[in-house]
Figure 1: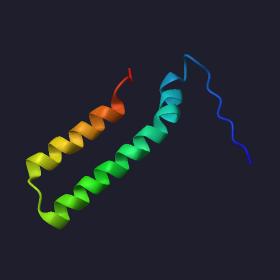
Figure 2: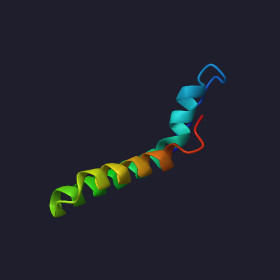
Figure 3: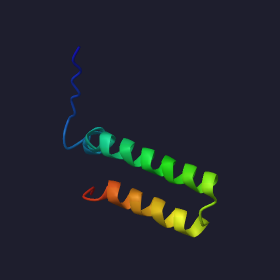
Length: 65
């Protein structure tokens, strides 16, 4: 089975970018989930957890503009 996505650029630039970045963002979501799980399980410091989450989000969004 194959799937092909087509976008009319530049009109659908945002939708195209979302499709292209989906894998990276999916991985980031998994990392955030693990950070939250660790926080709840081990009682990690809230500020450290939030800073770590922000780092994951920033890295995932890098080069997006």
